[in-house]
Structures are given as C-alpha cells and as structure tokens.
Length: 88
Image (spheres, rainbow, N blue to C red):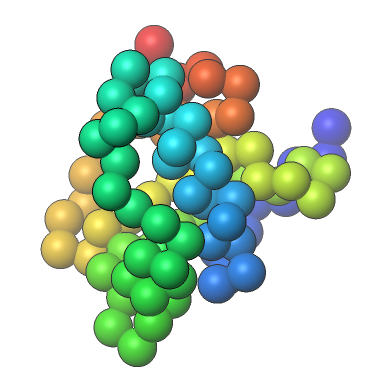
C-alpha cells in the first residue's frame, strides 16, 4: 500500500471537507456542521491561516486528515475514511 502523507494544500479543501462531514455523520451530528469548502480554503490556506493540516493520500484520494489549530495544539483523535479512529 503506497500512502503518501503530506502537508495539505488549498486544492485539498474538498477532500478535507468530505472527511469532516463523514466524521460529523459518524458522531451522529451531521447537522451541527456549519463549514463549507470556502471556509476551509480561507481559514486554512488564506493570508492568516487558523489551522494547518496534513493529509494521507491513497490512489489520489484523501483517506485521512490531521488538523492542527493555530491557537491550540490539541488532537483528540485522527479520523480515517473507513470510520476508524486511532483512539477507539
């Protein structure tokens, strides 16, 4: 399995959002999400980013993300497209 782990770029915003939406559904809170692709592009890749992100890519698809907030360094758990967590 050739998985590439790299720093996210603006073009990854849609894939990042997809996993965030999947996590919200997994947590049974899909309606709590008030985030869209534009928010991710601006807040993660704009002039003053509020977060940074790494992505794991397999066969050109983002399968996992790790988000780091600028103000706080707190990673509750990583989340993958399969719905598995490192901390379950």
